[in-house]
Structures are given as structure tokens and as C-alpha cells.
Length: 228
Image (cartoon, rainbow, N blue to C red; front, side, top):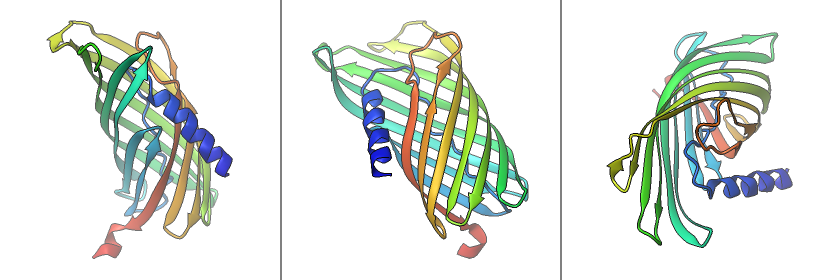
């Protein structure tokens, strides 16, 4: 298990060092099972941080708020860069426990993101802003202290603004991504370690993107009613 975690970290760091326009976010597959159940997950994907939250509004309806943040100085081809990426999204969906230990979920959401890099050596900079609409389905198996499952996420990404050295370039691009992933959670009571590994495929390859989704994190589960 230690070797698997180290592999995830090494590959994630490598892909965090590249100046991509689009960084796929860590998918939120909470596998909710009852009303008022709340899950908060925080972790790392390379040098970036992510925060995923989910809340079961009713016995079958849930909402999510997720975020991702990257700020990293790197060197490529003899030049020094500072990469930055920030993304936040919201989603609403359905969850359905069945056959005692299985949960199926479907989420529809959208988000807004920013990606930029600055060439420290030359003083040039590029900043891009994009919005995203996504549909995610996941299926998981749950047992006391252990969860495992898979998901697939389809995302429409629209880069609606690009500013080069502070000037709008007028360059707009769009692409559609398919992002399958597997995930595993293990721990005890309300505390679990999260592992997620996935791929990202572009339909048109109009936008440069990170092809891997590899993350490790910590998840805490609780009920809002228990706090009061």
C-alpha cells in the first residue's frame, strides 16, 4: 500500500509541473446512504490541494461543493515558471443505496476555473479562464471501514478568456473530456483514507490538459444533526 501511495504522489508531481490549460479535478464520489449524511474530503493531487464536500439533503437527493488549488514554481527547458490553477464547482444529484452494500450516484454540476503561468526569466505571463459543465455517474461497494468503486465523468470545458501579458488575446477554445476513475476508501468509524486513480481523454484535443487524475486524501463523515 505504501508503494501505491508513493507511485500516486510521484506521477502526480510530474504532471503538476507542466503548464497545462486544463487540470482535471478529483471527482467527488461520496457514496451517501441516508439523509443528513455529510462527507468532507481534503487531500493532495501532485502539489495541488483539493477539498470535496457533499451533503444528503433528502433520502435520495444530495449536493456537492468542491474546490482545487495549485501554486507552484517550476523549471522547464531552462526557464523558470510559476504555475497557478484554481477551480471551484457545485453539483446536485441523486444517490440510491441498493442490495445492502451498494450505492449508485448521478451528479450534474458546473464550475469556474483559472489557469495561469508566468515566465520568471522573460517576465511574460498567460492567464486563462474557463467554465465547465459535467455529468458524473458512480457505483460503489461499501462495507464497514471499506469502500471501493468506479466512476465516469463527462465534462464540457470552455476557455472563454485568455490574457497574454495583461492583454486579451481573443483566443477561445472548447473541448469535451471523458474521465473514468477508480477509487478506494479505508479506515474506521468516521475517518477514512481516500485513494483515486483515473484518466482524462479529450475529444478534440483543442486544449492542453493533464492526462492523469491521481490523488490521496482524508475523508471525515458526520451528521449535521449530531452537531446540535
